[in-house]
Length: 119
Image 1 (cartoon, rainbow, N blue to C red):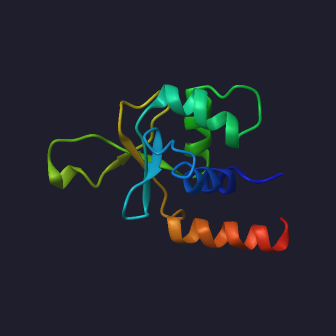
Image 2: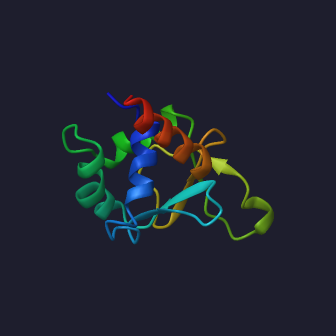
Image 3: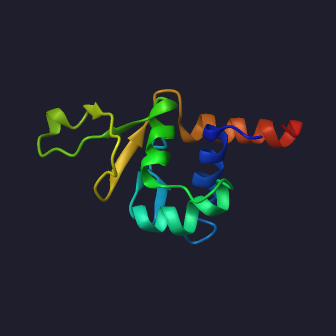
C-alpha cells in the first residue's frame, strides 16, 4: 500500500495530464502545491488517487498536517508571507501547502524509484 506522500506526489504529477490542474497543482517553484478548488479536489481528484471511502476535507487536511505539511497563511504583508500555520478546517481558495521534506524534485525521484522497484 503506497504511503500518503507517494500518492500525493503521484496526484500532483498527474493532474495536468488529466486536465485537472485548475483544481490542484504544483507551484512553479516546485516547493509548494496549491489547492484552487476544494470541492473539485474532493469530488474529482482525490477519488482517482486515494481509493479509500469518500475523503472529507477535514480528513485530507489532517493527513497533510500529520505528514508535516503546513498551509501558508494568507496575508497582505510580504514580510508575513513566509509564515505558515497549521489548519484543521477547510482553507480558503488558493492556499498553498508546504513541507520542508516534500518538493517536486524529491517527489519525482521517489515516484521513479517506486516504479522501478515495484514498491
